[in-house]
Image 1: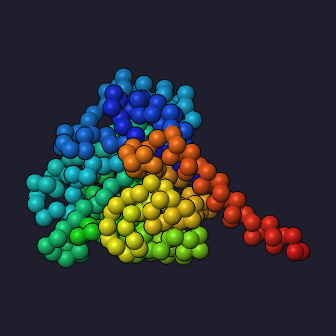
Image 2: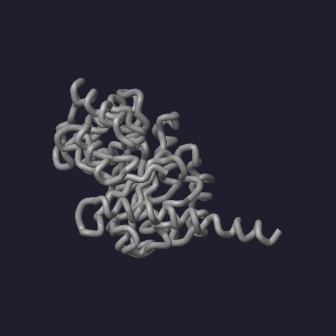
Image 3: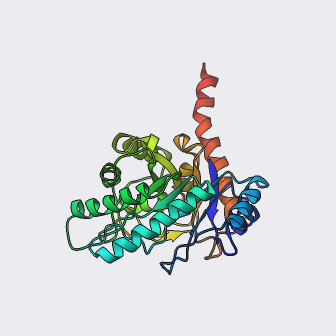
Length: 296
């Protein structure tokens, strides 16, 4: 598992690499444009070259780009959908230039009509963004389920993927906080295992491209998206440890978005906690097998 953090790309993507290295990351996630503005960022050749050189000199193995939260592919407003298409396409093109593992997207929300109509609108925008870009996958993130947000269930993720054409570039990103908030009980290794089984049945594990490990301030089924520092929320140490050691998540970038233990951005201490949780989880998962061998 490639554990990492969401970091700032201020100064260019090479600076984001440096911030990831400072924190002990194996993966990083960035916004490729200001989260508060519609203006997309286009990285020039010098910045792309500097980024690639920084990556080669580091221990980082994966980059994720998170589409900004302004994007709402399901909006009933044609102008907002057009802006969302422009922004998402720019993110996918940036991902291709930087050889990102994928662009992570909240598909959007709609409060006034049925989820089927909203899914159809979102899927159409996603399909067009993929057609207008090349070389970077798109990971649809599961959501906590507040309001009319899409992706609160695996069935909705599957419907979005199918509606957008079902191509190989379409995948999913699972967020631990959002899973718990939307009603999936992943507070134990056993519970998580059952949820991963369900995801495989409905969406397919081959679609799983990335992960977000975040604890939750809100309880199971609350539909509230409120992150907590690892081990300090409703998932707790056991739930976070299970998530970070799930065997079927091996090899995937797994990003902690924060807040960290200091209440703000992710710091080196938070990455140390995550790596320690993973080690403890792997050790706990190996114990039953070790005991079984000793009885033979």
